Image (tube, rainbow, N blue to C red):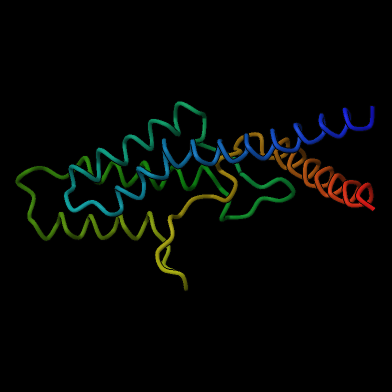
Length: 164
């Protein structure tokens, strides 16, 4: 019976971590990957198309306001501010016409890149609120990941004890 319970717990732990990983991958495929491409775009049209794909995903999934933090609200986890910046960038891109000056387009692309990327010690990093892939259920996912970690550690300790 104890092996059955252990197997159920292993399935639970793996299920939680795999699902959390899949949510992260889904965000990258449907949003952050497009934001990175918008930041790297060489034309206003390409940047606008990629940014609109990301915005559409955010809007369809209700990721337009709130905080990703659980215990306290911090500025770097403000989804609403981040989303409004993206919308403002889209608005600026929509104002550009085919007759706009090349310098204006270049400046706009540089401004977009600065909005989408942070420059750090490890190079450029996409500006995204931490935990966005689990938003708006960050507390639920935090609890699940914590439980899965504790159970996983417990299973390893139990397994090692059984080997002796």
